Length: 88
Image 1 (cartoon, rainbow, N blue to C red):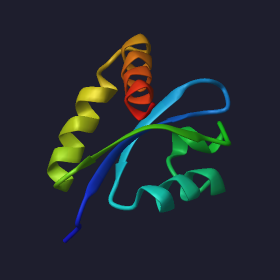
Image 2 (image 1 turned 60 degrees about the horizontal axis):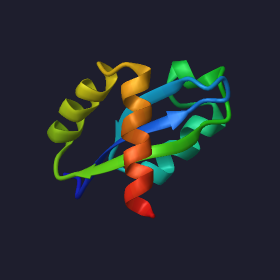
Image 3 (image 1 turned 30 degrees about the vertical axis):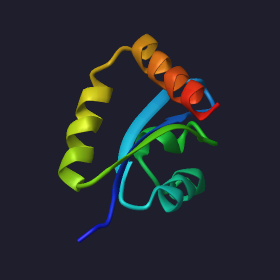
């Protein structure tokens, strides 16, 4: 059982965006940057965390991941920018 689940977006070194989910966000980003994470990010290192959401369950995180992955890059950038604006 996990306490929280996170959906996240990382920006890769080639300016592409990768969306995933994890129950341990910090560890997952480290795994990506070690080159042992997702196949997509392995050749696009380093990655930088640019967006994340905390959700209550794995199921919610997986559902949100699907929604974000269906977004266009422009929509993802708007999502990231709105998240950055909230942090200020």
